[in-house]
Length: 230
Image 1 (cartoon, rainbow, N blue to C red):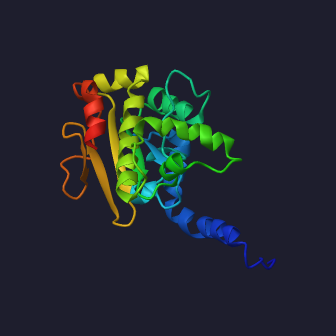
Image 2 (cartoon, helix red, strand yellow):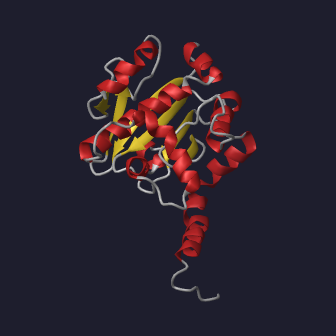
Image 3 (cartoon, rainbow, N blue to C red):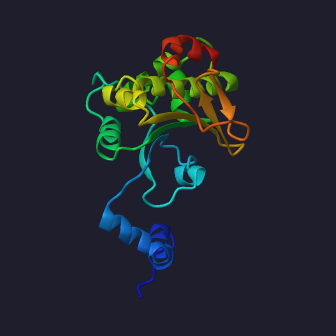
């Protein structure tokens, strides 16, 4: 067998997957191929490497339909930010896969939120434009730790509101076929805080009575109050 360069740890991990994980889960993968995927959840999360959806949710193969982007942002339905893969993923998940819930998951120490205040590198033209999606969640304050935390949570609520602007999402929510969940993962504590639309606040999952709600009617009409309350 050819000797591998010491730095080629990716190839070693691929071989471990093929020789260890896959044999133990082979039937599951074969069933997913034979019968197709039927995930119940669309997980829209930040691309941050420290956020690991399957660890948070305990999900296995075929259980999460995922889209990751910088900040876990949802582009407006009106297409004002052009074509985007996140929009396509939402359409596919709701209209084709018929998922039953959508999770928006932000997190603590988010680089996207910090960059929205401090600015992106000069050459990061696309990133600079993308970060404008969170402008409505920014606070008129210097970005200290508490301001950043509040903004991270406000950003999650903003994305939930944007989801409700998608006609097919709103239609499914109002028909009781789809639920929306806003999460803020505190990386250093290992706890996810879930958004409670009725309270207008994030609640630690360890004491929450549900995995997150909203925004739904009648809370949609109170969206300004909800954002200010976060």
